[in-house]
Amino acid sequence: MSPPRSNPDRWFTDEVLPHEPALRAWLRARFPTLTDVDDIVQESYTRVLRAQTVAPIVSVKAFLFATARNLVLDHFRRRQVAGIDAIAEIGELSVLEDMPGVSETVSRQQELELLTQAIQSLPERCRQVLTLRKIYGLSQKEIAAELGISEHTVEAQVGNGVRRCAVFLARYDLP
Image (tube, rainbow, N blue to C red; front, side, top):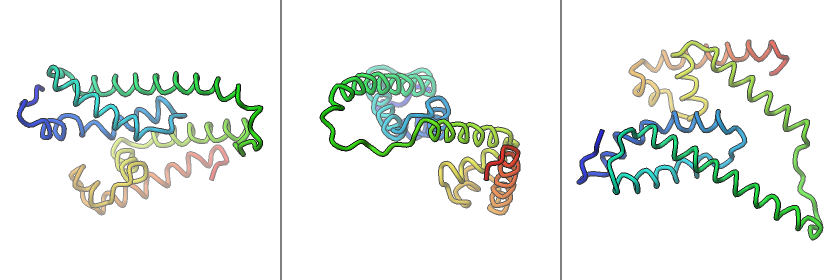
């Protein structure tokens, strides 16, 4: 949908912002080691707005996601280059960083993957409600308004989702 040139704020609110939850979820799932999701989302917005001033964007969602993907890839490329420079300077450091070991990192990654599987195994409505509540931090009232359901239903779905995830994780001896 092409925006009216006179109201870019309205276009951004109507056409771009609704994709933010999906974009954040996609970035976290696709790039689990990415620590700067907020920065990537904000820079994506900037580039989408800049591109829209040049020519109308035919598919806002596709453009937004492609822009975010390219920004993440650039981020990782820059980090690789910075990593090489850091290795050259390691002899100059007097104190080593206290970072988690490889086994702890792998264990955390596996736990995150299992949690992702647990959430994905939930029924669609339950998964939506749980994700909005626990991942995006929306209030029960906000979720109810967003999904057009009662706050009681939101509360029940969150409880149901948490219980189902706990059962799923218990199969792998996780708390």
